[in-house]
Length: 207
Image 1: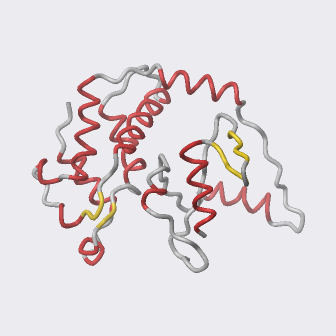
Image 2: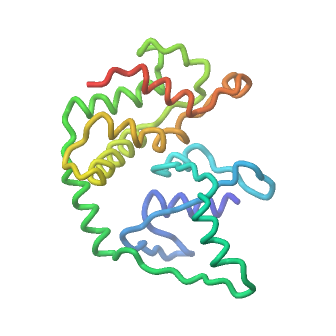
């Protein structure tokens, strides 16, 4: 519903919620995690592009592995399932990790590469890509920010203090698949946003 979407938008953008005349700041760190069922749309409300754009990443989660599914069976196949969870980190550790991400170095050539990737989603012809009629909406400047932050975080996970082009390629699809909106013509030809993003990564020169 529109009221719920408005409240979610405020929380995601301004990190606060308003109830009546009172506004409450949200705790830090704060994140929104949403799930999407690609099969059953009945009873759901599609989010507008502006709200979808505020999600930093869109991950595709497939079926569990054999061992994971066995664990699901062991924990849940009961009239009194085991729903307990154990903490794997602390707020302090997350805050410290965020500081490490902020300290990661991004070379100016890498920054230009990120900007070129995003610009290619809006003006593919400038990069010798014949995709303009397949893209209804390209990625916004928010995608530029998200791709940079995600690449820095990925670099930290690889044990580095600097970003390389491969970091951007590794995490880029998760950042862009929900931000590059295919046109009706693309949908008619079964060309997905992932196909478009992959073509852009192949075409934009790597520094």
